[in-house]
Image (cartoon, rainbow, N blue to C red; front, top):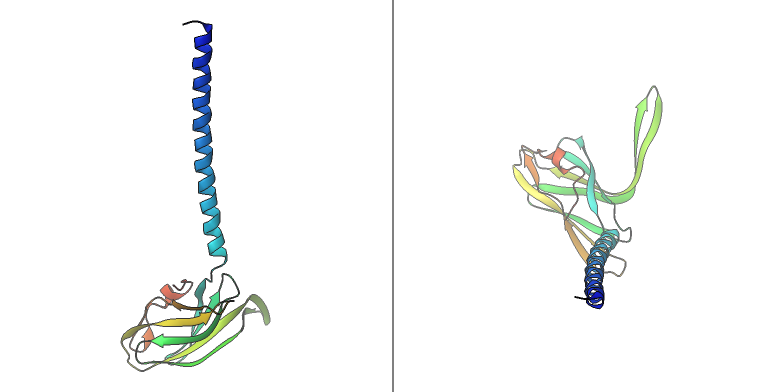
Length: 168
């Protein structure tokens, strides 16, 4: 092989390496675009969750349901799917959480929430869930569902597992 043949072989090897590098760049770019699209979809979706659960009386519970995603999704109804539980009241409002220490009240959280009061029948042993009905900015309907709520003897047994759970 003379010098001209070696130069041609070298050119082919360089072209092959450039092709491999270009192919790798395309693969990485496609992964980045897919990741950006996934993040964009997450950004424009609602993320409803049960932020707080309080017992406010005998067999009466208060649930704070908040949207941590795209804000232009509105709830228009929350209903209980199951028996022996009645939704006493539901409303949208500003919830303020505060701590009182040394005769001084310190506000530690403030958020918009859908407040839901439920009353459970005495000695009820059931399972059920909340169904959230609403609409988006273009008036497309949507439905979200809470995790299963287990009730034994008129009391919620899986309360700790429900707080901070996203609804699907």
